[in-house]
Structure formats: structure tokens, C-alpha cells
Image 1: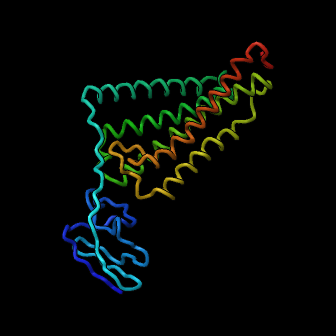
Image 2: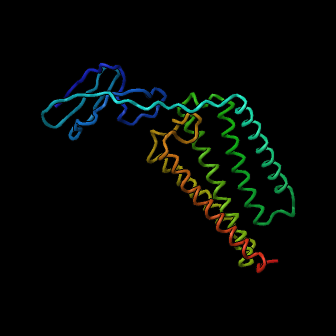
Image 3: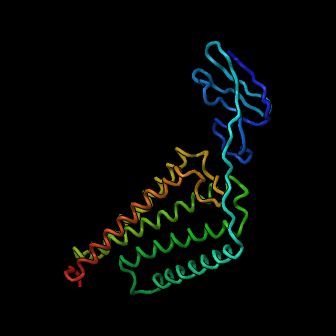
Length: 254
């Protein structure tokens, strides 16, 4: 059966893949609650009507679903200015560290090279966050999704390098190993990061770019794809640091 139902509220249905600037964000006519959608599918929806195709007879209807508005708490102007200043200070410190390690001939050991990679990720992550305060990125859904993914990638990779820094100190103290693992660290840090970003696009595409401050997504499940591996990196780093701390007096390398 083909059914065409007129909309009393002139809006498109949300229960389909939408990832464009014209996506509605308030209400939507959908099949809802006590109604059974099995055997029916939406063939077309416009502002004025929805056309469905169903197997079998019965009563057919579309209903309104309230969508929770996405509203972030207001940040005072003084706080916004402080955020911008502190991000700039952080970026300057990171840049100085990278220049010192990069230009110094005595700081090319594995410890400092891992730190150099972590500083680079933090610098780029800070830059992406700062751009959300300086440019109207939030006005474009696609731009917000791209910047959110970059924030996701750079800060998660920085967490990976932090865990690798803990591991290189662990191997130095417990086994006397001071090099030879930088390539493995690179693939681990960025490999896990790329997989995490890929999960957001494979499983949560329509939720990307919805956060008012462009941090990945407004939905907590999507943010969990960032925070779960980040928490794992932090726990690994803390573990390695604890082992190093309790073995300083019996270190294999002096």
C-alpha cells in the first residue's frame, strides 16, 4: 500500500540520514510510541507531506516528536577573553619547546622526540579550539564537524604520545632501553586515533557537528568514542609513571 499523509506541522521527518545545513532541529513528524512501524518505510518526505509504503492494511498516521533543543550555557565575555589568552600562552610555550628540541643537537634522544610529537599534537589541538572562538565556525554544520574531528584527532593523539612517553621512561628505568621504539609509538598513537575518528563517522555520522562549540558532537555517546581511549592512555601513563617512581633507586640505566 502507498500512503500519502499531509503534515499539519510543515516540517520534514527526522528519522532518516540527514547531514546538511538545512536539517531541522526542533520538531518532526514521525511514527512514534504506540504505533508500529514494522513493514512500513518512508519513500519521500517534504515540508508538506510524507509518502510511505507499507505491507498490509491498517490505520496509518504520522505524529510529532519533540526534539530537545541544543543550547550551550553562555560564557561571560571576561571568561572568553581569559580562555583566548591562556590558549595563546599554551601555544607559545609548546612552540618554544618544539623549537628548542628541534634545533638542539643534544636533545634528539627518544624521550625528547616523543615529547616533541606530543607537543605538536597539543599545539594543533589548541589552535583548533582557539579558531572556534575567533571564527564563526559554528554557523556551518560541515565546518563544525571537520573542526570537531580535528580536535578529536589531535588531542587523542596527544594522549597517545603521553602514554608512549610513560612507556619509554618505563623501559629506560626497568630495562635500560633508550631508543628504537619511536616508529612503534608513532603507529600506536596515530593508529588508535584514526580508528577512533573512523568509528564516529561509521556509527554516528548524523550526530557530528551538532555541538555549539564544535567539540565532536552534542551527544554523549559520540564523545565517549573520544574519552574512552583517552582514559585508557591516561591510565597507562599513570601506571608507567608509578612503576618508574618506585624503581628510581634500582634503575637499569644511570
